[in-house]
Length: 217
Image (tube, rainbow, N blue to C red; front, top):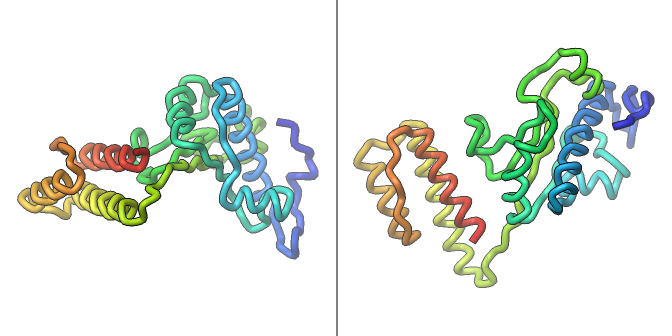
């Protein structure tokens, strides 16, 4: 991506000082966004600017001066399609992180990174405008909600309970009997069979996956 050298200099916007290091982070994140855009265009995947990125685009014509990240959103079908193709179609070094493949990511969103760790290699620094740290773009998911508020509240209650149980299992906060009672309660509330997995982190990941299915219903 061709970014003018002047973009990377210290600047004052809206009375707020933006140092060159933040400008480098912005430029690096734009590189990640361009790779996402390339994959999305190739596979006919739709995405939108969202959160502070959308606000900054409308209000400031770019980044919010005191913001330091990029946020986009996809509908559930497009998000699943992106996860299926992106890791195999992005250029070397780029990666997609989510709760299924990254132990430090326990949110219901995806994150595309230009590199999985700090990198001071010359070619990497050249492409990412001398930004050696992890440049990323967050991908949020749009799901439908029930038209009936009571049904939606029932779903929210179920999901929050399931997440609480999953986190407690991973953190070792439930004795075996209490864990079994909690899983049976989930089965009664959801009408679904919940597998028992010995590894607590994998059990957490599994339950998160079941919650995500409920989000997408």
